[in-house]
Amino acid sequence: MADISENYAEGWHYVNILDAFVKTGILPDRSGQHLTDLLENYLYEVMSDPFVIYSVLSDDVKARVFYDNMLAFIKQIVTREKFRNSCAQGQLQGMKNALLWSERKKRDGWRRLLSEISDEFRQFGFDERYYREKFGNEGGLADDEVWKKMIEDWSKAFDRRRQEQQRHDVDEIRERNSRTLKQNLESIPEYLKRNDVEKEMFFQAWGMMGGQWNTLVFEQYLRVVKVQKRYPQLERIANLMGRIADDDGTERMSVAYGGGMKLEHASKSDILGVRLGQDIRSMLPFECALCGDDVLYDVFLYRYATNSLQSFRHKSEMLKPARNLNRRPARLKGPMIVCVDRSGSMSGQPELVVNSLMMKLLLIAERQRRNLFLVSFSVAAQPIDVKCNRTALLDFFRQKSAGDTNAVKMMDEVFSLLAKGEYASADVLWCTDFIIPMCGIAQRKRLAEYRRQGTRFYGLKIGHAKEMGWREMFDEIVEI
Image (cartoon, rainbow, N blue to C red):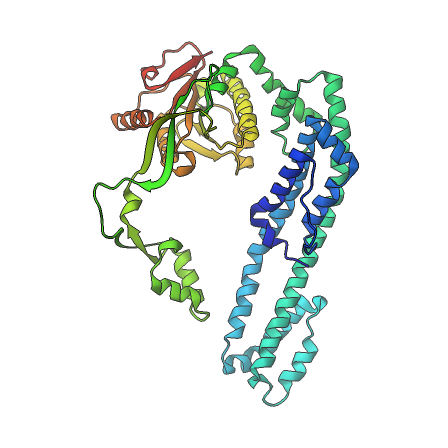
């Protein structure tokens, strides 16, 4: 049986299978493969069901419901496996250490070790009696092959237990998931038809529910989505965000971010010195030797955990990424950074308007496979990677506006993101009433510099207050 964790890597292997099926209705060919991955087997079983295939290909609502249901199932399994992987590190290290025991340590500690292994792995095939007989004979502990065989059997029993745990997880969750999936595919389309819910509004509200249908919760989210009908400006601001072609098809300024760096002059060596940290890619050969030595591996782990690895420091780390400003057909759909004012002046209707806009942007990011980063701010700033931290995102929607406003920390978060490759070509949106004290000269200069490099800054201004001098620093501010 294959170790599921080999394919886990955050579950992307299974998500890719799911993506391909929802787009085409066709499953990848598995002929010639060892069909031993329990989670993958279940996915193929579900996606071979004629009812599921028809539902996915005939109705985009059902396709989305199916996708989110299965995605939630995958996440549950992956989360459990990641937890078990974390817990398993101690056992695996114990096996490595036991192989290096001295003759004296074996003689003094073999009984205790054997009892511990047997207590935990007897039911998974570890034969304690066999090794007690071997070690009880005169000179038995001097036989390295017997000792290695004991560690090998320990490892095999450990693998069998993990496989059994994986099987239990899949069986337990799949039964519940199968019932939920069938019920949702039948009841949700009927509910939408009965209540005359528009598809686009369904997709936005459903996107907040994590694949779990609850009529009461859905209707709460739906009320927030319907705010968009009262404010057409939200549609406009959503269309502004991202590097997409204008309505008339004109080209737009784009930012190309590359791995290249700008150097003032030629340099014979990029190495500047040595520093301490966790940079494995640049660590000194001495540290590599620790990592590759079974006896000293614990020393390496300790140095890594305490940020004490010695690594080369490079000049290029202190150079700014090369940004090329040029006109090209506006094909790229870039990432989005949305800064939301959660100060006291935004409570009530402004808060509701912003939440509705966020739900629309979430759907856009999802459909177009775009990164979306949220920075909630008042006195402090709270950054949220929307794709990676759903819990924090839901907390954001439950959060009530309160406190004063300070844009400095929020701007620092934004500038930090723009300096990274993943968000280097992002568009930035501020959702606020702009009752924000003007920031210092340093922040204003950095914002102006990013605008010159091609980053676009947009604002959604809610209310009648003056924006306190911010307008000239933005490409466009849409007002409600």
